[in-house]
Image 1 (cartoon, one colour):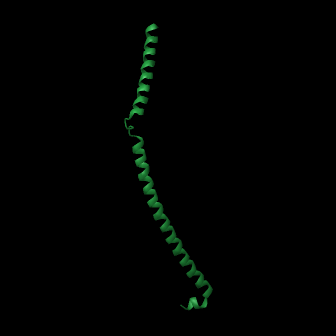
Image 2: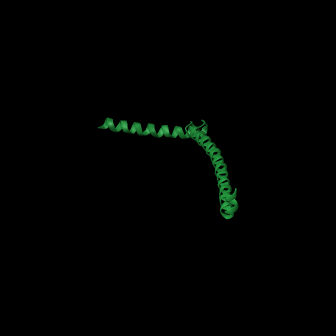
Image 3: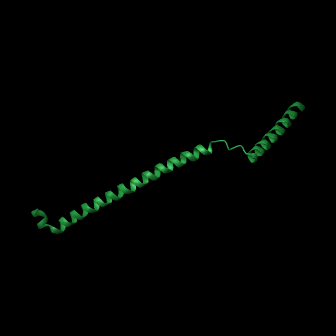
Length: 88
């Protein structure tokens, strides 16, 4: 203890630095835990979004008409292509 009594300014500086280091460590730990929770929530939401994006849409009338239009245009193009092949 005599060393701190003889070098009071340096001792206060060392103690202040130690307190600041503890506060910074606590701040980093607190922000890391908040970030980890947010990251986990984000990963769950992203996985759910990807799962929902890969599902087939619910078959209602608008989707059925849209699909029927695609099938009709594909059928017409296929028949046209067959006729072109027969004519050659």
